[in-house]
Image (tube, one colour):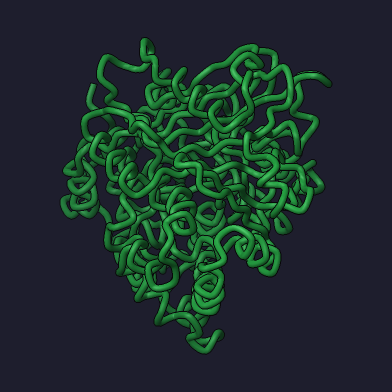
Length: 545
């Protein structure tokens, strides 16, 4: 007897979103999560007498998706808070800080006060970048087939299409150099783009990240009231309200495949759960490495490719602290001049290194060492969201640090680096900031591996070009179907991936729904094309002991 029509493995935001769409379309769906609760890296957890977000709490791209309306997440408690300014940018060299706003005119006015020679370049940049960003968002909103994506491009009369393809082949450095000649204007975009992906902005193929500023003018950055986990809590509530079932503490050990067709999963406790469809909402590579020992012929090429790729090490860490009072920036008076009296602690602070320090960060990454001046993404979530305060007098600090490699010499538990990151943060805050830290904790790549089942602490992301997506190259990652009939992929390693986005979960659900609604003959035809050539009675494929 089947446990469900569909089993979704992985309770991060993409897995939850995929499961919720399926359940709301009347499909019996079971979601399995290894941890004690859902949410993955979008979670908010309790520790040190406070509530902390596992990763940075700023949500942008998911707000461009129809997910919130379609899953009726506001009816299930989701509410976004918005700072007046989107981001505050500061620099290790003490250069003038500047602010980015959702509103174009306010950003230009702020830039005119801080980097006036870059204003004309910013206006030229927006003329070129806004159509690129609009088209990229349209593509992400579209469950991808070549025909659908081409129709989206045609609907916009190809506006931005040529530049999108051009930028996607070039480096971010080369693209931004057309508009700006001061790294204090370009580096903040790098810090939230290629740096987060773990690649240098000089790398060909990173150019589309140059649309970052334009994207933030199209989509307003926000934070869920109550923490980032309020998003995944609302999706879970939507899923369960539609009849879906969540099972936590359920660690998948292997896929069960019969005649080249997936028929279920086996858990670590030896329980086998059967279903004609399995959606893996986790690192796609690990599906073929950890869950499949002897892949059916149709999937062997994909499995070999996954196994041949070298391990990627995680490089992000996060310090969470309880503060006994609100911090105040050393540059507070200068910032006030171009934030027009707004609360400076509401937006996230991006501390960017200069180009030379960024090169040092990448050089040291391979040796497991942290740069002298790492990229920092920081905020005090309890300022914008008082519900995050431990009490009326204390606040919480979020400090995300890049690059902090998994293979750190001597290991992370005994490292003095996390304390140094707090000292770096304190350099941007008025004297005495360290004395206000009542308690703190740190998430390093080894902890992400142990607690969130992220191999080597690495967060996968989708790295293929828009052209590859358009034509459906690497179909398991761009179209969500694998060569094993009934097995689908979604998550950050599939299109469009990366960050709190949700499009992968939504798109994968659309593909599964479409396949389940097809006439039986067509489904069986696809199965016959993917089954084992030499038929066997039954095979269970799983991880090596």
